[in-house]
Amino acid sequence: MQNWKKLPKPVEKKIEELFSFINPPTPDEELAANLDSLKSSIKTDITYMILTHTNIQLSKNSKGLKDSYLNDMDVRAAKYLAEKVIKRKYAKKQNNELIQ
Image (cartoon, rainbow, N blue to C red; front, side, top):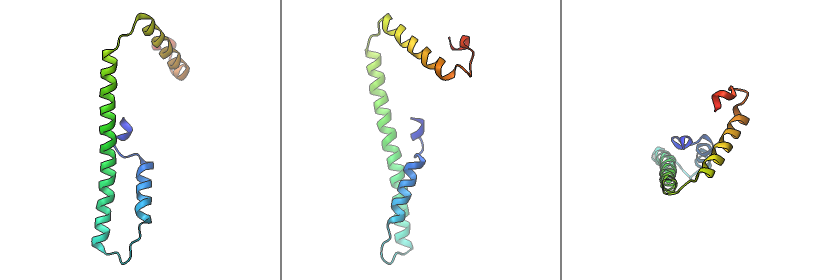
């Protein structure tokens, strides 16, 4: 979710490209200001919508996890998988004793 606290650069670039493509006849300062305002609003609205969506999904998923039951076998399997991934990814950086 951290990457949506601010509009990601690739999305911002595409919005900029879209507005650079809009070439109305006889543009003036008022039109340019209105288009610039619209562009800014779009960027803000997209960021807000995505953040709202991810917060709602996080809440739903968290509630689902709280309402679910994990037996000991599930916990051991999850721990084993997490340790395996961490060791594979960070083994060169960290001592194995620190991982456990």
